[in-house]
Every structure is written in structure tokens, then in C-alpha cells.
Image (cartoon, rainbow, N blue to C red; front, side, top):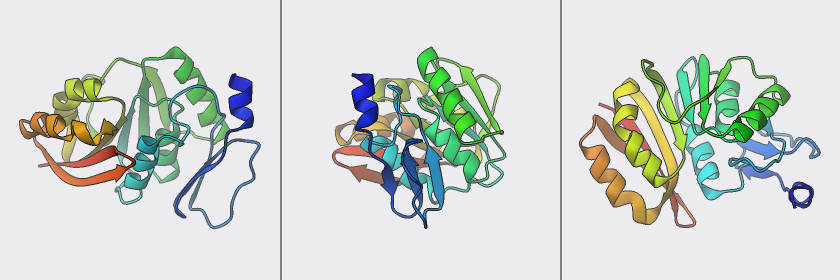
Length: 199
């Protein structure tokens, strides 16, 4: 099944900003960021609407020299994009060993040198970040929002996805009791990503 899926893996392009392709696809000219992802079964190959929403949201983020966290990194795609966009350093966390192994391969394939990859179930204690990216699921996001708010630097940006449009109200209720201010909402095919600023 996995071999069949790899054979049918098509590149994903988000405007002229980013292309996610397998090693067996040629690069496209005129794309700002070219990401090579070995298609294994980790989440985050760029095909899911939430991954595309996260990539689109990253286009306007102040990534240059920022300390970035990619929580639930999957294939490592968002962490790799953050490094290519000039992040000072990137911490990529996942609780799945298979994903971590795949992310490590993908980071090597993209010649990344400023990403630290580690196993973890949630926010790493005692750290603060200028940008937090979390494409996970509603329950984990609800659980982690207070910690994300606390560990986001003043003026920092949090982008979350893995949410359906019907999840918006419960996420907003939780965010209301934090220091997070909703800045933008992105939607695609019933899925949603939210960008927050730290007040």
C-alpha cells in the first residue's frame, strides 16, 4: 500500500510561495521555497488542507531570525520551511517515533542545520518562542493553548490548525482566557487555521 501511495504522490504547490515535492519530482522554476519530502505515512506531506493552510499562513510571518517551535512536526515540513525562511533556530517536536525518523530523513534531504528534533507529548517546559506552529487536532490544541500562550513571547505569533470550522467556537472560548488575540482565520474545504498574536 505504501509503495502504491508513494508512486501516486503528486507535488503540492501553494501559489508561488512553496512547493512540496518528492525526490522523484523535478523542481519548478519561480517558486520561492522548494521542499523535498520523502512520502512515507507521516502526517504533513502537504496534501491535507490544514497543511496547505499552515504553509499559506507562514508566508506573512516574521520568521527571519525568530525562535520557532513546530509542535507535532510529522514529516518536519513546517520546520523545514521555517528554516528555509531564515528562522534563527527551530525546535520540532512529535510523539510518534516513526514521524521523528521520517522528519530526520527529510531534514537531511533539505540540508537543514538549525532544527532540533525531539520526542515530546506537548509544549517543552521552560522555553519561549517567537513563533509557534501547531497543526495537530482539536483536543490537543485545547489542552495546549494555555501553555502555548504562556510560552509565546510578547508580540509573538501562534498559528494553529487541524481544526474544522465547527471547532472555531470552542477554540475561541479557550483562547479568550489567555493572552492570545485572534488576528486572522484561514479556511479551505471546511478546515480552518487561526493566527494569534500575544498581547
